Length: 298
Ligand SMILES: Nc1ncnc2c1ncn2[C@@H]1O[C@H](COP(=O)(O)OP(=O)(O)OP(=O)(O)O)[C@@H](O)[C@H]1O
Ligand SMILES: [Mg+2]
Image (cartoon, rainbow, N blue to C red; front, side):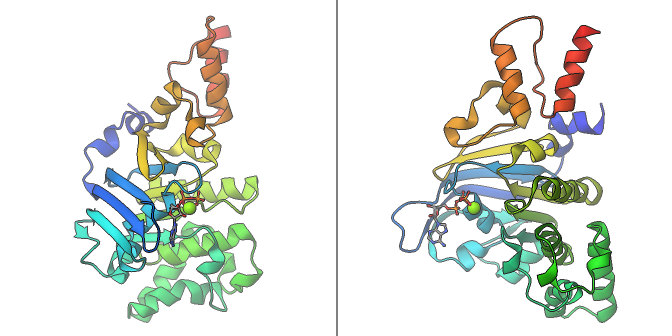
């Protein structure tokens, strides 16, 4: 079995230890009369690549905030249930400790960058940790290299493109050497080519560095081919949680405000209308679709 097949069968992550455990989690923001999360239960294994999807307001960002302790430590509200991150109960652990384990990249990189140079931005959280200078320099070099942005080191973050800024924001989180990377719609302000480039870098971090990735994303076409799991949320609840191909084979996700990749919609249409072409394994890319058709016509 190849590594990709093992991932798809859930085999690779199956034996891996849990890195996040969510048990009966509900959360209501202070002043709100509606629960943003309702009885969420979830186990994330080390090294998994998880995509969170669902219509606007369904609770994706709120759930991500629970993974790095911003909820309940920063956002006030009513929380029940518990979240364990690398064995730590987020209710008893300060955010500066949790954020070293679960680093969060926000939707808008401008909220994360404020120093005069990229280097200073990446160094800032490390200086706050009181790390020795040589360690800081080593980490900066490592983080910029892994994202392929060494050439931006002495540039001002404010003069960079959206995609470059987003990579700098990721580098500054990575330099903390977290085990989990949380990304909240990181491609939302990027053009398709920059979005693809950013997603390629995120996939590399998962495959090469073994980072656990949880990413909320509307562009499923680009991201699903790499995901071990797709979690669909609706009004604060998890309504689907499985391998993306399994979900897309039987489900029309549009009821949850999620647009499936076009290629899997076409494959579902083909399956529904009979004929000699049948997709038992849902294609997630055009290449997979074409390979199947080629196999059929010899
Ligand atoms: N800081 C906050 N204070 C009060 N309510 C909030 C806050 N942040 C989010 N909410 C509410 O919680 C619910 C879930 O919002 P959340 O931002 O988690 O959704 P989302 O799935 O990330 O949406 P989007 O796709 O638009 O980013 C919504 O009803 C939203 O209005
Ligand atoms: Mg959001």
